[in-house]
Amino acid sequence: MIAVATTMAVGASVAPSVSAQPSESGAAAVATPTPAEIARAQELTDYINAHATPGSPRAVNGLRRDVATRPLGPIVDTVGVGPVQRGFWSAFVYSQFHPNVAPPGANDWNCKPKAGQRPVVLAHGTWENAYNNWAAFAPVLKKAGYCVFAPNYGRTDLLNGGGLGVVLPGTNGEVAIEYSAAQFGDYVDRVLKATGAKKVDVIGHSQGGLMVRQWMKFGGGADYDHPERSKIGKLITYGATHKGTTLLGIGALGRGINNLGPAFNVLGVTELLVGRSGIQQTVDSPFIKNLNRSKLVFPGVDYTIVGSRYDEVTTPFDLTFIRRPGVNNIVLQDGCEQDTSDHLSMSYSPRAMSIALRALDPERFARLACGPSPWFFSF
Image 1 (tube, rainbow, N blue to C red):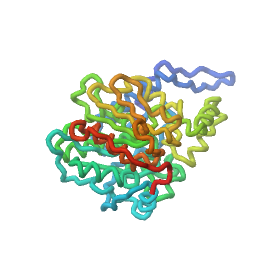
Image 2 (cartoon, rainbow, N blue to C red):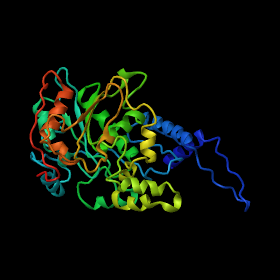
Image 3 (cartoon, rainbow, N blue to C red):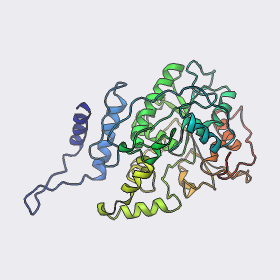
Image 4 (cartoon, rainbow, N blue to C red):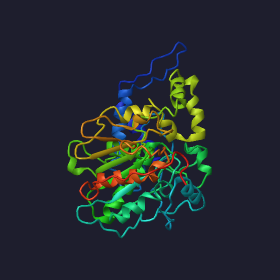
């Protein structure tokens, strides 16, 4: 009841200009809120959630139509640690039988950052998990001396916009990205408290990078006017859907059909298969438009954005880049053509890992690695 009342209050507080006009039948027609009104409602919603106490009901923007119906609880801790993996698919198979394990080197809540370092939080992608996304990456960061944390976020059910992926153990990141970002923000607060750090550095794959930007912009993760208050120091992303994806044209076609009107809601049907977050990441979606409307980058945050020419999920691959001054956009193959990493194998690429290390500490890790990394056949 509290959440419903909050939703009504948020919707009502920003839409005084939306009035119901009588129809020819005498009934009041429902007016459609403008994009500006929806955006203002979202800003108020995110402000309320950013200042809410942990565990309290979360506000929902009542003017939006592309968020899930039920917020999520806190992120559940991983249990145990899996082995180091050399490729995504072997890690994927392992995670089907051990869906809640941490990648090696991650989630030591007694870890204290060394001088000059911040905790590193890893954000997995859609339908992935902390282990199969980071089973090679996390131990490299740990060996370099970092405190590493890898949560499983965005796990839900079919009725809450999860899609059919929920039938597989270890699939996460299915729910509306707004709710995953709220979960992630609470997790970062926990990391900061446990480590005593003032900021974290974040590495995100695919949706993970996009979701972190949602947290930064609307969830209190970054402060545009007071950078010293931001909770993030560096953002490093791989194949992130920052500008959405055409998904080899399939997503763009679906979005184009959807834009014809409510009677052509093919993406609503597709959502039953891929989940809410997958639909939100299609190019030109309301979510993508809202996130990229302003404040694409925040002062005081160091951005490293990595894309692969062989990415078959975030397409065209350069939609991952954020074209703003100070953002370091990197094509994975520049200077290392033998690395043919696709979307999933990027987080198992030695070059990708060395890019992250250099971004975290350019003095200690100035040299980039280069070696073969297979397209798709990542075992």
